[in-house]
Length: 135
Image (cartoon, rainbow, N blue to C red; front, side):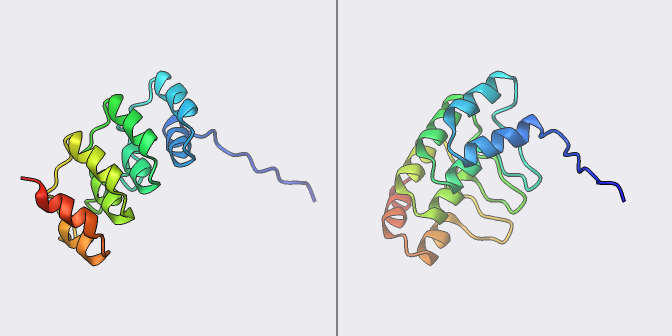
């Protein structure tokens, strides 16, 4: 019986970007973006690099991606934005960064959950107060 060798397909540049963001590897992200990968590329679930950075609470990564033109209002397949993920994680600094960058605060997910409802459900008093202070 012969050995069967599994040959892995090369990783797409977009997939490399998502992995670098998830690992917090800013230098690799810079390299991949310099190769021409869109900062707004999405994975199969519709998550952009900024949504991934917010979900991983990577503040410096999020700042960099925004500076490189990341759309702060992109949504994944369930209607979540980077701001939604930041609220979910309870990261007020990231919430403030995204709002300052123009993130919409009156959005709801596909399931109808607003940011205020999410913050309340998760007991995020500081985020609730901050979002409530916005006009």
